[in-house]
Amino acid sequence: MSLAGKAALAQVPTCALPETENSPTPERLQRAGFTLAMSLGTRQMQIIGKASPVGFDRVIRLAAAPLDRLHSRGRLDDDGTRNTQLFEAGDKLRGHFYLGGLSGFAANDLNGAGGSDPSSRVPISETMERNRRAMRLAEAAMHPGDWWVVNAVVCLEADLEAAGRDVGCNNVHAANAVALDRLRRGLGVLAELWGYSPPQRPAPSMPTAGNEAGAASAA
Image (cartoon, rainbow, N blue to C red):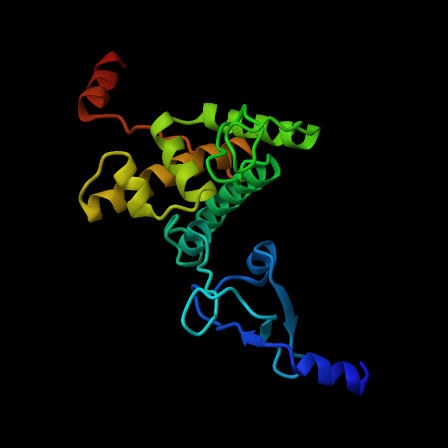
C-alpha cells in the first residue's frame, strides 16, 4: 500500500474488537454489514468506519448468538462431543433459516415469502424453497413444545429466559431450566436426523430379582 493510502486509512475511525467470551465473531460482524480488518502486527481485528451510535461512545456492540454462547460455555451438554454435535445441528438449522429467507422481522411462516412484511409475496427461489422444506421437516421431527424453544433460541436468537417464559414459566430459574431442557431435546432430535450423532437408545434394562428367580425355576 502506498504512503498516501496508509495516510487515508489512518483517518478512518476504527474500533478494536475485545477478545472476550461473549465477543461477536468476525463472521457474525460481517453478516451484520461491518467492514473488518486485521492488524498484521498485533493480529487484532478492527471494525473499519464509524459504527452506528448505539452507545454514547458511538460503538455498536453485538453479543454472541445464544446458541454460540451456550456451546462455548459447554451448556448444551456436559459431554464435550455431545455439546459439539448439538451445536452443529443447531447451526445447520440456523443456516436453513437464513437461506430460506426467513430472517426478516415477523417472517417466520415457513410457507410464506419472507421479508420484513409478512404480507409480502415475492417469488421464492429453489434455494429458499429447499431450505424451507428442511425447516418443515425439522419441525415435524420434534415435539411442538421443543420446536417452539429451538426456533426461538436458535433462529430468532431469544435467550433461554425469554423462551422459557413464552412456554408458560414465570419464574426466572424455571424458565431457564425448562427452555434449556427443551432446547437440548430438540437439538438432539436434529442431531440424529441429520447424522451428527448416533441414535440415543436407552440402555437395556437389567433383569429384576423376580425375573432371575423365575428363570431359575424354569430351568
